[in-house]
Length: 417
Image 1 (cartoon, one colour):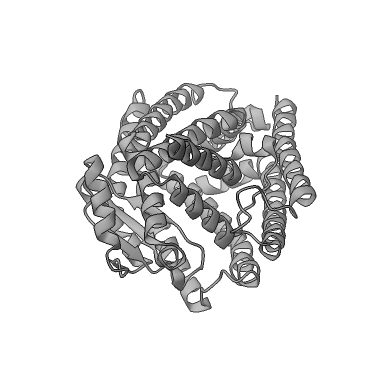
Image 2 (cartoon, rainbow, N blue to C red; image 1 turned 135 degrees about the vertical axis):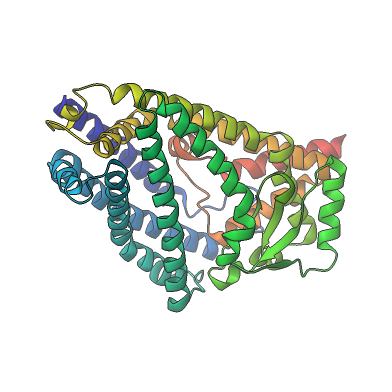
């Protein structure tokens, strides 16, 4: 069984690398041609820069992925999990304490291994292409704060989960799922006011008249948002974006200050109309419900699988603690979920198209959304030539060229009508 599991893992990794290779070869072949509809937004110089940027990002990601996979093979199939598991049991002597320490040390090791890649990405690659505005001092500050928050949450969640397992060994799966679900909603509620301000400054929109236009559009669809804010994203990067945050009465719209500088009011309103479409069409609610149902099923499956005495033997181990068994189950779950990736991506792309249609209907400006997407592509050096197989397998958003083409078709139909 160990050999079969190892071969399955190698085939899964190989499939991902084959798709990535196809994508890069496709880009090298077609990356010098400006796609139809992008002639006014992308010049040959920008296109060449986009191709180079995508290739370098891919190269860095590939190196990190290969290192991660080699370490994972050593840890799971080289016997290190068993050694690590035995060592952890000598530290605490407590079921809850062992669980917390087990995952805390693994998380810390993963963070340390990722630091060189993060530094290279931020201060070399992103800097080379004119995106980085982060200072070393700010990077360190962000790192310390994110690690402090991450450690606090990891300790809290792990301790609570293992306490529930100990408290209710016959029904812990339902209690752990319930706690995690409630905690997730709680974090969505408090994040805009407690966590996000630790990293960014939020203030009213500086562009005169923009907030009025945004609120007028929201009034058309009966959507109430607490505040419309701009974020000082330019302190760290020149990349641009916009998003909704929070739930219920605390949800608000956040615009990157870089986005406000790059786009016209009409284009910004069109981008936000797309995001509002996700809310009005209940994409976010449906996603939360589906995810929670999947997590409930996963909790029950984990509960049943942990009863199987032969579970540690899948990795050649004679026995394993509860935390180690969770690692084994998580690994198997990642293999089983890989074939489902294109289905999840397709459902997400379908929602994106629906939100585009909503934005066109509510603003009556499909060309504004199309032009905003072309600007986002140019400013962020987005890959305009993904391989079709790669895009269908991984892309949660439709390829930008396809989105712009559909929007401009919609615009022509509107003019003809």
